[in-house]
Image 1 (tube, one colour):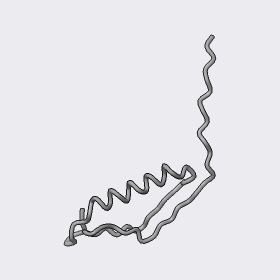
Image 2 (cartoon, rainbow, N blue to C red):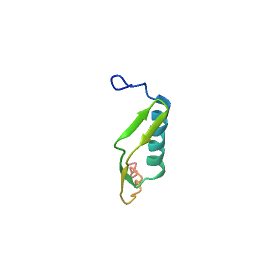
Image 3 (cartoon, rainbow, N blue to C red):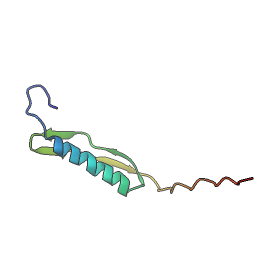
Image 4 (tube, rainbow, N blue to C red):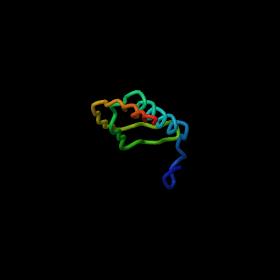
Length: 70
């Protein structure tokens, strides 16, 4: 993964960034959107230059309605 002529990026750092974003989504059920444009990927890691998140009221998922046996 690299731009023409650029040094290879650190895939472990990108994997870590995605894991952290995923964990944030798990930890914050009110997280509706997350954007991180741009992410600078380098051989020694990656940096999120800017981030925007949108929160929405958390609405718990209701349990399915039980079916009455006849």
